[in-house]
Image (cartoon, rainbow, N blue to C red; front, top):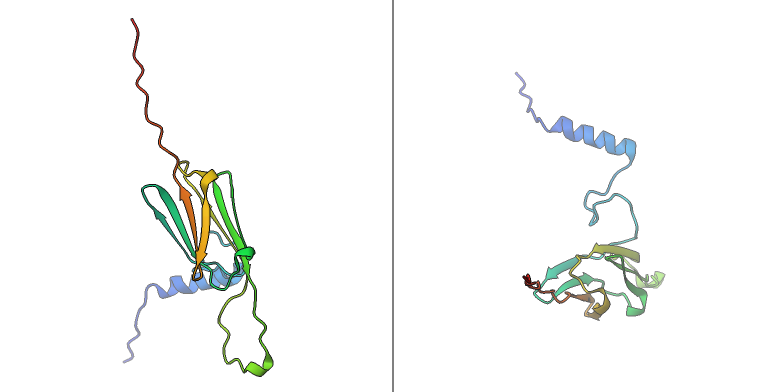
Length: 147
């Protein structure tokens, strides 16, 4: 007698694979929530909120500062640039090339507390740091009722 192993999720996975083949494979490991490809590669980022500011750290080794464009418009911070490919000489006998080159594009929605006028950026050891200060909190004002 032959026993077959029943895998209940197998049919669902097979169905998902068939749908992906019909509509094109969507990159499920993307850093963005959308399936639209906007760049050749996407730098990894860390976003921290501290008491006085927000801090975005992006890993962009090998990118010259002149090749990075940071802009702020309508509460959206845009980070774009390009990592240029090094020439691969035939005489160097490359066995493997894994580093990704080309343009990158990331956008971040900032909260209303971010002060767009005082954003600063610096880079060190391949890590871009973007500091976004918070606006000074406006204190509620007590209004007295006159009789």
